[in-house]
Image (cartoon, rainbow, N blue to C red; front, side, top):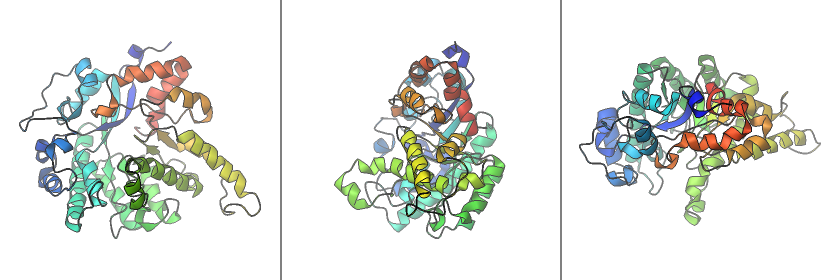
Length: 384
């Protein structure tokens, strides 16, 4: 029977973050990062930016790297949150082979560039956001090039930037891949380049990713702005939940638009969006296909040789929240058991201490085959 010790050094982690403290942003991203935060109506307060964790201005990433410190330390003070030359040693202490890294600073930049969250951003503030995203992309390529076998920092395509076109999105992807980036993040709230994700005019973009074995990924704040602001004003929590709704819609359009049929090697992941919705969505898409053959129901032009759930199993990966009963989803949807993947959310507080042990306790009763899939082989699609 597989043990935690047997998994050590083989685990793939599909969610972690850069989390440089406010006072250290210039060290990583220069003036563009600093200017964006100073212009931010939502995050210019250092305490708010640091997730209400007090970090002194002279902070140095020097905390000793041990299993205890990497699994129990959280926030910008955690080892390797700032200094990515130390992140491989953090992975060694965690027993992780390879890790996908999402932005910290550029998460705020994405929120700002696309209109804000708690406060609406001005034209100037949005421009600073887009500039900071460019700074992140340059840093992402540098880190990935330095540690290509251990760290994959996502690049961000400006698919919803005013004036973006499918051609421009494709060019961005080509430039990022040429720079060394090996995973690309896209916003899921609005149509990329003004068209449905399933529109064939985006095929050159998808082909670029597929040919380079570079996954396309959605992750919060992808999805902010999907629902009408009136709903957010009526129910503040909807402002956070809309990212999951946007993910379902985006994936639905990819599948039903035939993207995975036209690009069978395209890799796609929905990260830090939970997975409770994934199985029911797969069921509903399969039902929709059946409905399309009924006279007078649905779109008669959707003709796929495989079930939607089969495309999801082949092309899509998701990361459960660590408070979800993921073992229940795996048992309930055996046709999707290749889709569910482990993640730490390191060093975010919501990743919780000793996440590997917690997930192992949930999944291990299902047997070695599922343990191997969940912690190792499933995620290889996204971290080849």
